[in-house]
Length: 71
Image (cartoon, rainbow, N blue to C red):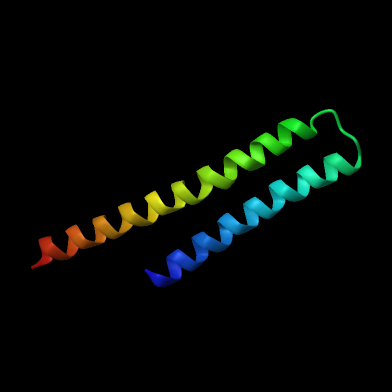
């Protein structure tokens, strides 16, 4: 379970870095979509950790239920 948490955390970090990198790149090039990219990055900063936490929590509950059924 610890390994799953680490992998999911790294995936979340990677996605956030890419989103902020895209926003920075668009701002440097003076793209008209920069504000939209920034909005998406800010929303993802909140939504990705929450989604990953929920996924990990559901996995823990599922594993706990499997152990209880085996006993």
